[in-house]
Length: 81
View 1 (cartoon, rainbow, N blue to C red):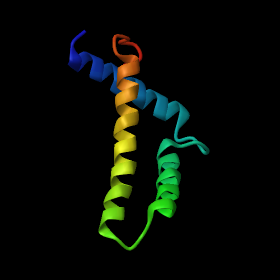
View 2: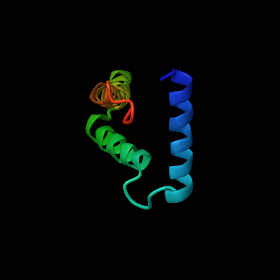
View 3: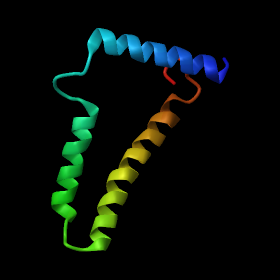
C-alpha cells in the first residue's frame, strides 16, 4: 500500500476516533508524560547545567525509545502501523 494512502487512512481513523471519543478524562498520554517528567525532575534536579541536560536526555530519550519500540512492534503489520 502506498505511503500516502496509509497516511490518509490513519489520519481519517484518528479524526473519527477523536470525534467519537474525545480526550480521555483519565489516562491522557500527554498528562502521563508530564507526570513522569515531573517525577524525573524531582529525582534529578540540581542547580546545574549537566543535570538539566540529563533530565532532557532522560525525558526526550525515553519518549523516542518508546516510539522506536512501538514502531518495531508493529513492523510488518499494516493495520497496526
